[in-house]
View (cartoon, helix red, strand yellow):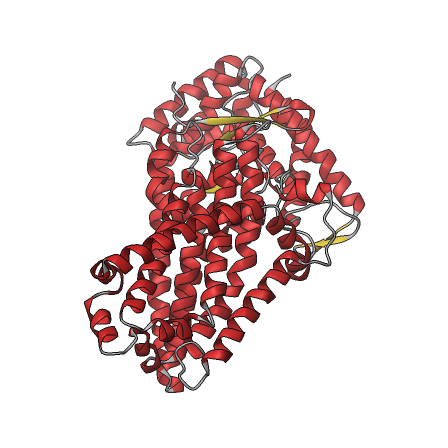
Length: 235
Length: 337
């Protein structure tokens, strides 16, 4: 199966390779849309606050000062402030499961995050083509700051506590994938697949079926029976 | 090794590491330092470091022996989280010492490192201003493109277009001017990433505008009034735009002439120094905004006082930027570059 996510391999301690799943154009555009919607919402709120200041103090100039200063901080500080405070995430990135990291995989420093976000002055024109054509989806700001945007969403894949002796990684992955996605499969597809895997267990390690319940229970709720047989726990 | 045996043996270590990592914010080591509200002592850090190494090794094993399984995915996630929390950019920028150290040491060092580019920016700006002045001196009509017909007719009647500033609330004017100038400075700085093209454009355009405006004012014998208006804020404002542009040119230089270092490394080093300079000058624009709103358009303030204020601000900026009390060192200059 082809892997569509670009990956940057960095070397950790003892030269152990660590793959960073780089976020592509689609994810980053989606995150940006969410963030710019948030910025617009905050700008609107700022407008109300400024109006309140102006009417409360009777000084229109003060209200304008609040609005102008706040708008400037929103424009240039929203992204950097959130990324610094939330460890590389903005609300948009958090919603899409992305994170800005240093190119070695570690946390990006505050200075680097300031650089990459001030570069939006230029990236507003060039970001999309740069991200589309750069092998690691970097825009100007990422190049100058030495950062990457990666996928950092927590996977909800169960980890099996028991497996039949003859099973390899392929069988384990298949069982875990079924248990993770059983709720998403249409009709009785999950049940049929669970029956199939229970049949493999009966073939390879019939003693494990004791934990799955009696045959009637297994027929009625095969996915749950499979979960019990394999002692699947949340990853 | 059997998958379930691998899980049974190693899972307690992963769970313990995940718990320790969850208690830790962004860590940078240390002896009993407070990190995001949690005191992290040496023993805890050592346990974290050992756990991190174990997780990395288990991640490598799982990726090779049990790819695409839940354990491999969990270990990949733990390894990434651990790297993120415990690792950091080796080339970190302004971090140590706080604002005082930044403005007294870090910023002056970075500023000194780009004086040659500041001279280049000043030369370009001056040349563009001279061109604008000469052009409008010969063809005053061209200056209308910069100031507009309404302002031109005001000049013909002996009024500067800046008089409208006195009718607006000073807080509004000050904030608008300050934020606009900051945006210009940031754009001039960021333009370095375009090999300096946007920076050059900003410098030349602003120089042309200044020269043209002065030329039109001179044509209508309003040069003295214009000079009195810009005397208080103009010198420092131009200086800061030039400094920001020079910082952008430093990035451009690294982009087109990286020298002996890899281009990416040279770019990152230049960006670190350049952003230090930019962050060092931006606060001055807040001061300038206030001067341009409250002092410059005020007819009650004598012209001589405005000139004195303008010169004093520029002198103060240069003293602060150069910090003559800070001895230069070779390593500091190399770090700033």
